[in-house]
Image (tube, rainbow, N blue to C red; front, side, top):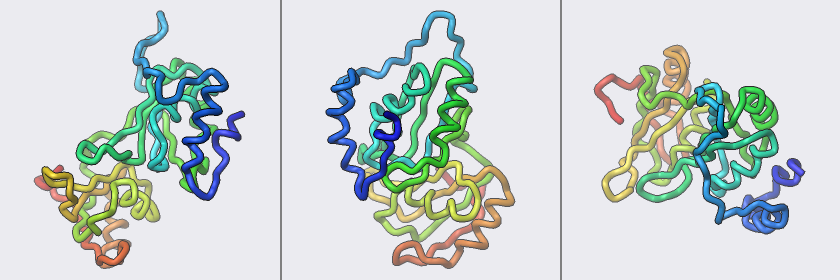
Length: 214
């Protein structure tokens, strides 16, 4: 049944049609309330968390829950959304009930293609919001999303997170940050991407200074 969920079509709108299939199987997509409660005796640990990146923008929290329930008890499923636009940021989190379930789910989903996008799935907590290993990226196309920015920079190094900075109205300011796991990856990204094109704009990429937000 899992392969049925993950089958990739040319467009990802199949999720809407798939909802009816889930309901027929006893899942209540769009109506089910995600619960953060844990079974009696289950102790929370960072080892029970799963971080998922490069999700198609059509994926909702309930879809994540249904997929990962194939591998155990899902206590929490969340796709992160932009504060201004309400659109998916292309990444999310899962909390399960045992490390065995986490391992099985990570082994199954990491590298899987959904909607033409290759998922990055890791056990453990998400990358910290503040990291010393960051690129400052200027002259971004105003329509580029954080996930698209991450995808672009993921060609050279393992991107942990990417942020586009918006003004108070939700309009991009044309710059952002890409977070890596090491100083070496940051330097490689600067050398690889500075002066290159993203869509129709020439990027300015440099090592982010400590005073630079967010």
